[in-house]
Amino acid sequence: MSITDDVVATLRAQLAGHADEHESRWDQLAAPARQQYRALILAAFCQAADARFAPATPAADVIEYVSEVRSRSARGAELLDPGTAERLLLAVYTDEDISDIDPAASYRTEILLLGALTADARLDAPSLDDFLATARDTADHWLATTPA
Image 1 (cartoon, rainbow, N blue to C red):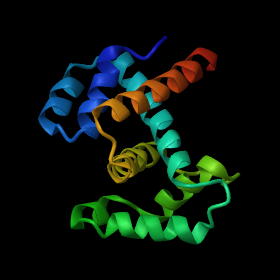
Image 2: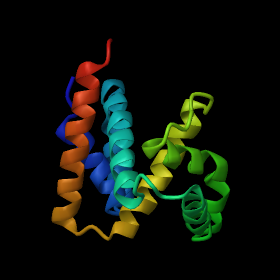
Image 3: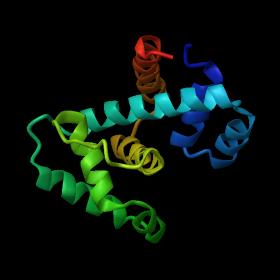
Image 4: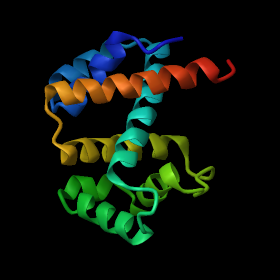
């Protein structure tokens, strides 16, 4: 199973700040495409976190980043659990064990952090397309090598 163009376009709309388009596209995704979307979110999150944090980044820098992201809005502070966010970011480049994190909480946190990370990167349209193409390749690889 490969990530479809509709799935990529749905995430692109979200990351580009087109909320109405994202919602419309999301509503049109069938269950299998929503699983692809989850894989694409994870791949894009890992890619964005890896670009933002070098492997030797101290945990204190991750904690500071999460605090800064949470301070951007009251809604963000409410939705983004700092402990979960910090652990997910650290897990991208350390051996942080995240197996105890609820999958729904992980997904929600990855989406929120992905939005912040890509906004901070200030990707123009071509750069966003390149970013999503790389994330799509990664997600496709993961889906192809994951047992059904």
